[in-house]
Image (tube, rainbow, N blue to C red; front, side):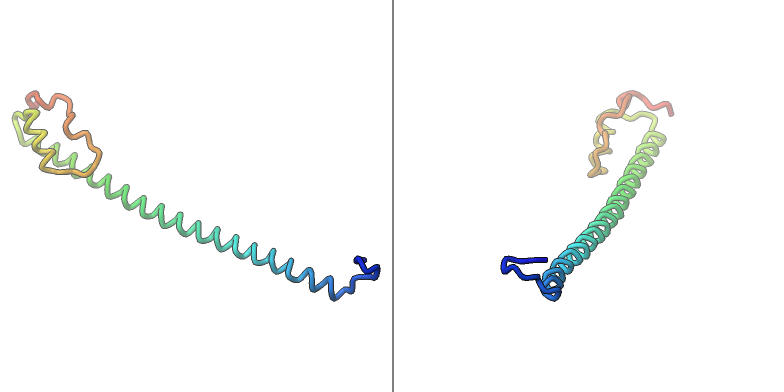
Length: 110
């Protein structure tokens, strides 16, 4: 390899130039791998937390539905206002359609 002085570039100079370049590519590779691993760990933690939240919400839905069934089965008649009061007392922090139960103003079949 020749340079502006007309002479050949010594092999040692070429090695000295290539070592930092190689180290830069190696550091970029290690950094990229570490960032990917960190992202995967964060994603795994997020999915575990989301699963726990979903299981908790489903459990809350289940409890609310069981309570509603017991309320209907234990009553001969449930008026719309009674149902609304019942759901307000539960104070569910879930997006349940608690006030819009079909036929809630009519007599129960029991």
